[in-house]
Structure formats: structure tokens, C-alpha cells
Image (cartoon, rainbow, N blue to C red; front, top):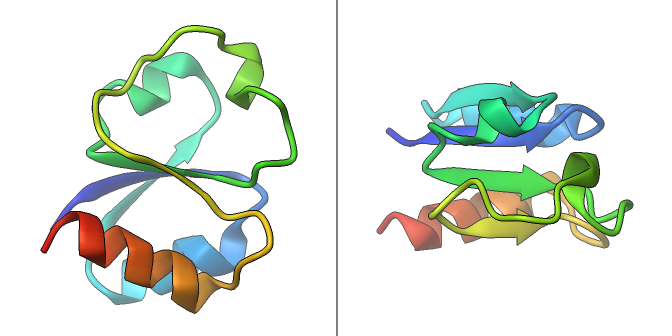
Length: 80
């Protein structure tokens, strides 16, 4: 399964992704995203953790306005 970085406020998304077998990493700094296949952000901040540059080459999914199931579907679509 994929290594997914998830912003700290998205505990429901973290739990759902772990149930699906993904490795979930808390995004606390730019270094946390460096080895992730995909990142999920809350969309509440303009740029995650004040980063203006990109530290991940994989997809970034904005979870704002969606539920955990919809986010999980988006993650699975990226890796299917």
C-alpha cells in the first residue's frame, strides 16, 4: 500500500486510510512529506505549514468540504 501524509486535523481520514492498509504519516513539517506517495491536507491554510515550494512529487489531495470516504476514494484512484 501507499505511504500517505495526512495533516493532523484530519483524524477521521487517518483512521479510514489505516483501515484500508495504507501507511499513514502525520504531516508536521516539510520533511514529513518528503517520502510520502501522496499527501492529504485540510485546505484551511493557504499553503501547508508555510511551505511555498513543493517537497512532494506525488499528488496532494485537498480534503476541504469532503468526508473521509470521499478522500479515501480519491487516494485509491491515484494508485489504481
